[in-house]
Image 1 (cartoon, rainbow, N blue to C red):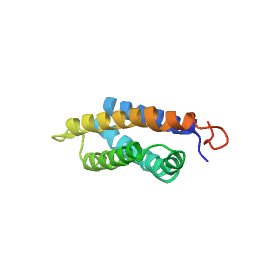
Image 2: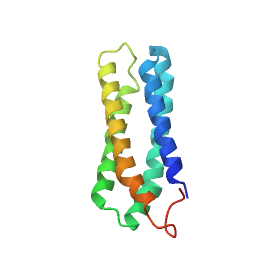
Image 3: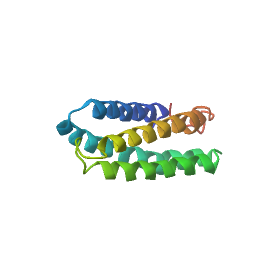
Image 4: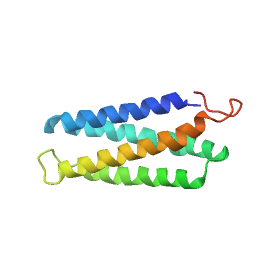
Amino acid sequence: MPSVDSARENHLEIQRRLGLISAATSKQQDALLHELLSLLVAHDRFFDDVFFPWVSDQGLGKSAIDICREEHHLIHLLANELAPLRGASQGFDAKLLLLKECIERHLAREEGQILDFAKHVPPSTAVCT
């Protein structure tokens, strides 16, 4: 089973890509956005298919998981609206900022609620750390 550390590494890579997109030229942003979308899809699959069911079985409240799942949905809506735009397009910078803020808030929630909970589960039932 994937580890808490690999989940945190995924978070760091998503944050790194967000920083690259913000600093990139319009031409570079297209490729970086597609890379970010791929990372987000992998992130969602991992959390939705592996981590959320596991922490739920270990006793984490449904509310925290439901909020994270809804954030996944919101982030994908924003990312999919942003993807066809170009850096010079009207609304691009605003959507990029919103996407970045949503992702940062979401990752902080997963770190603070989901991963911290998983880190404190007894070793006999824990995901690898």
